[in-house]
Image 1 (cartoon, rainbow, N blue to C red):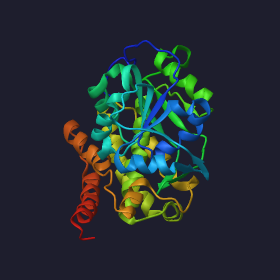
Image 2: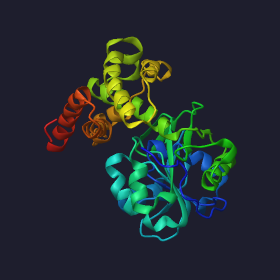
Image 3: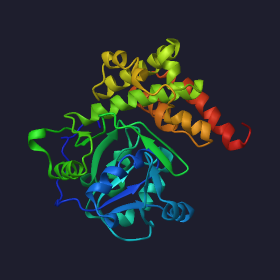
Image 4: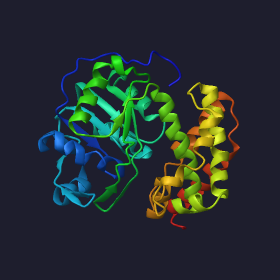
Length: 324
């Protein structure tokens, strides 16, 4: 994310006719209703193994009140797909990289919708830069016990090379665009994809961490000023880090995002808070941990993120030790 041409090496591209999803949770569920319209059932695969695969085969998934019967394939099944969409939690990425290997063929593309700013680099290291497309989603979603819900907020998926020109898309970005058009998905291809990733990172690091520590629904940020000022303290550090790395964030971006919760469902919760309440490991290392590591590397002080990291790690460690 710190340099390069922004255009990955081209590979031979054809129409995308098969898609595999790794991580059918809240985010993964948001693409299923659309892709189900554009692809045959056998060409929309859910990669899963063990008891989870058995449950998905037996029960399918309910998304926005509609039941979907799923084509579940095991990690051992070697049936390469044209496109893999990755939507796992950060701590599950190493296993996901292993689980997807039999779905990766010579011309397979990989699109990550994960939080954070590093999954693309990890995927490129495993499978080659020419296979990886940058991506993120701005859709808010919930998932619990096989039932998912989301609202098409008109923001959808953002994807592309590091840098894009709509008049001159690379063949691989054009192929994904054609699939999304056929599926009637909401999407955007930004000129500066790295800045877009950092903008979402700015939101996630501040909103997820503060809401997690406060156990706060979106309503808290809509009605009180102090939680928003706490988020600003987090965002200022991320912006300074972005300036040092040249990834495009400005002071104005933080100010513009101060009241990001204004249009959210008052009863909604950030993903890190959902993880805490459900007793799952959080993505603390990917949020505050990333800021701390990059801050040390680029000489940017990160005391606020360091403090939040310690608080959230305390929650994670207590859960793991069975003392909370």
